[in-house]
Image (cartoon, rainbow, N blue to C red; front, top):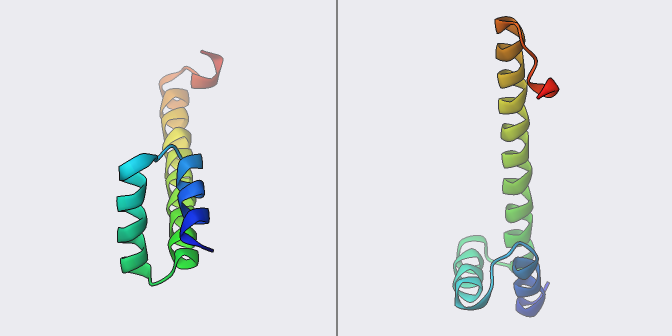
Length: 73
C-alpha cells in the first residue's frame, strides 16, 4: 500500500487534509509500513464495534431486568 492509497483510506474514515497527512506520518513511524498501519486501523475499528455491541447488550439486559425492553422504544 502506498502513502497515496493510505491517505485515500483515511479519507474514507473522514480524516482529511493536514490531519490525514499527520496521522499517516505517525502511523507509518509507529508501524513501519502503511499496510501494517491500515491493519491496525481496521483492528481498532473492529474492537470499538465489539465494545459497542457488548455495551448495547448490557443496556438491554438491564432494561429487561427492570421490566422494559430497549428495543421497543
